[in-house]
Amino acid sequence: MKYLHYDKKTQKLLGWYDDKIHNDIPNPNIEVSDENWQKAIDTNANYVDVKNKTVSFKDFRTLDDFKTLKTIDINSACSEAITSGFTSDALGGAHIYQSEQPDQLNLIGLVAAGTDDYFKCGITDANGNITWNYELHTIVQLQQVLADGKVHKQGLLQKANTLKAQVAVATTVKDVEAVVW
Image (cartoon, rainbow, N blue to C red):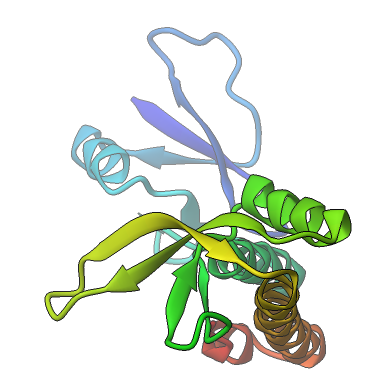
């Protein structure tokens, strides 16, 4: 016969035992038919209803666990949004600028140099395709691109901070899940 060993306090399933294989079967335990054992395996059961002698899946994560995961998701979404590019009208019309970390550093370096220089930017066509070119920018235009990039980044960081504050004060898992990027 098969047995399931469980935590008496949480009713979390701790292990499976078979009296044909195991000499010692820890307590507390419940005898389980082969059919119910297979069903538990198939459904990834991790919880036992001791009274009804049934097993099921239960999410044992705590509210703090959900808050931690949501904060990680917010940070990831923010980082992705920051590095996905931004637009600037520094050249007269809306141009797209890349904003991966090397792009940000290159732009800062060009502005720090204080001279006109070529910098990569793109224009979107009617089909949504971007054509990238190195265009000559005056130092004033480079400073404007840097300022527009800063506004883009600061807005996203502020949004992330606001969302993380909502997560911090959430009192239920439902409240945490309601916070979306």
